[in-house]
Length: 63
Image 1 (tube, helix red, strand yellow):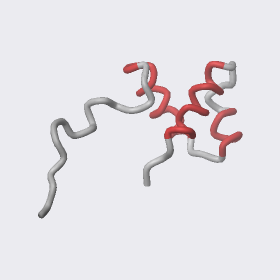
Image 2 (tube, helix red, strand yellow; image 1 turned 45 degrees about the horizontal axis):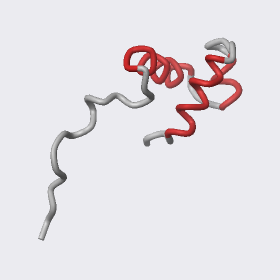
Image 3 (cartoon, helix red, strand yellow; image 1 turned 60 degrees about the vertical axis):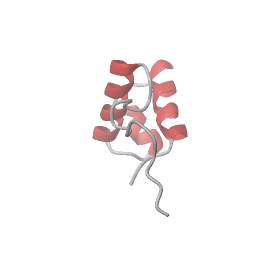
């Protein structure tokens, strides 16, 4: 199950507001590992999604 971009941004904003890694999962009812993963991706790419995970090029169309 993928998580929405709004939820990922909320995690980043809570981190910037000074909430600790232990507080954020409790506030949003998420696992600590998910919060760590999202913050690691944001700190590495300065974006909430990994740009290299998305497929490049044109999407295939089935006729």
